[in-house]
Image 1 (cartoon, rainbow, N blue to C red):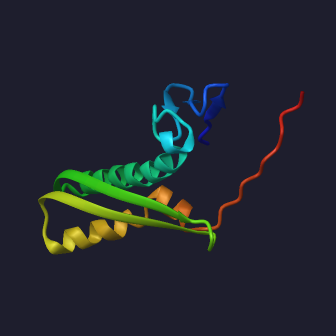
Image 2 (cartoon, rainbow, N blue to C red):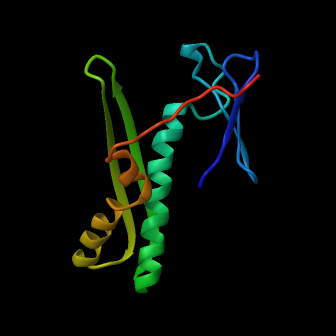
Length: 132
């Protein structure tokens, strides 16, 4: 199970995000009142898809012994609030000595990465307040 802790104090809108072993700063862009000190929450969501895609393709190519030297995943995320829809665009660049069949297989594998599956299936979020 993944567990993070996100906190915000009075400094608009600087957030500290921590796992058991890592930490990062998130912030809102200046046009939304933040200081742009780190990734915005939307950036982090898109980054999760990009990072998971890269890791999944690297693992698969390594397992197969394929000559994949570099993977780049460029992800855009847009939220259409009027229609309550989210839209991701992901472009994957594969570098290495790969034939077309390997490239197409890697595209299929990209669609099976954990975050892709999470974002394209029903999501349940249970929210509660901690006791005083």
